[in-house]
Amino acid sequence: MGSRKRIYNAEFREGAVRIVTETGKPIPEVAGDLGVYPGTLHSWVSRAKRNDSPSSDTPVQASRDHGCPQSSLMHRPVVAV
Image (cartoon, rainbow, N blue to C red; front, side, top):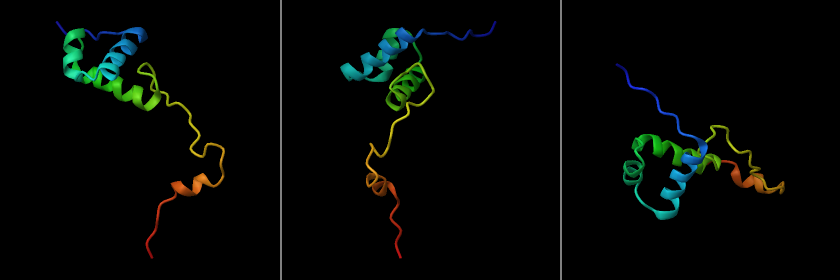
């Protein structure tokens, strides 16, 4: 008998992430309340912070220069001579 992989729908994942982010409760506590492994919830929270969605691994495309050609200079590394 092996363990079965549980699949959570997007609404559940988003709700779980919202509980963590809006209440400030620790991930292990929220995970325990919801019956989810803490590592699973942690990955949803991390993904949501990265991509604005716990349901997708596809990163949201954001413009780093915000339409300003000069702002790209601020992202270049400083090289010591």
